[in-house]
Length: 80
Image 1 (cartoon, rainbow, N blue to C red):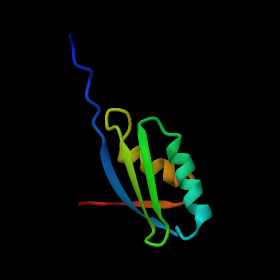
Image 2: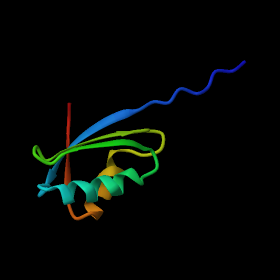
Image 3: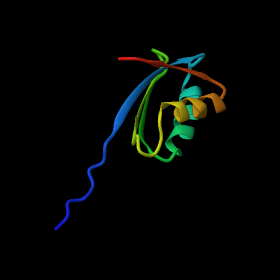
């Protein structure tokens, strides 16, 4: 019997420029939630941060940054 393939999830954190209200939060979260490979999006408008959990075999930080840019905001990836 073969084992099911184990799914790997990575997390990336961004500072968002001009991210200051609930409407901003909803716009970015809604767009990222629709991306293939994005498993969870957590936002913190008070700290201007978003955390994205994603499957690296499907998407990556560059694609996520492009999607944020399409909503009119700039994402700056924070290195850990």
